[in-house]
Length: 208
Image (tube, rainbow, N blue to C red; front, side, top):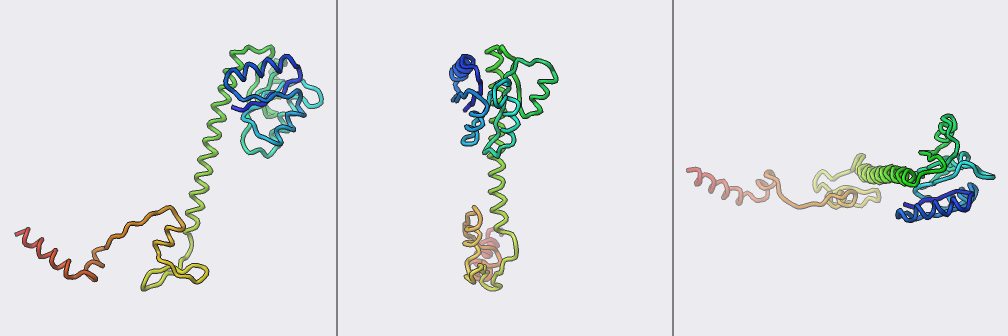
């Protein structure tokens, strides 16, 4: 996972970066909310871990601004706070945070919450991919909707530029369908009567 840290305390920032990096994450650390917001406008990390109390732009306002950005994917936000009152926690979640960890935090608890966030991120990415596949499938289906001018004799389809195309070529061009040629019983009777006659004669002999 790519994780962005916003923490104004130099020692806390370095410790947090070390802990997350050792857990196998790609970590970027900045010293305040403004720098985090500037970085987010260029790239989209998987997760943002931000301290609440920071100068200029605190964690609460950073959450609000991140949610207002038009990002390429969902950013899971964990808020670090020494404020333990229930109303303050609710305030943080309402501002856009997905989870919170109280300071001073326990390393094991922090990593457990990060991994829980990772599961949410993986699910969101999977859903986004499924939606993309569905959109592509619907786009292909839409290409085959509508009235198609087709010749009543040879069954060719007329395209917009007045070009006539074999029906199997048209369908293959506008979908992922593949064709294998066969022959229906009616056409067999029409175009190969001798073969049909011999086949029926053999079947009568076998039945006897």
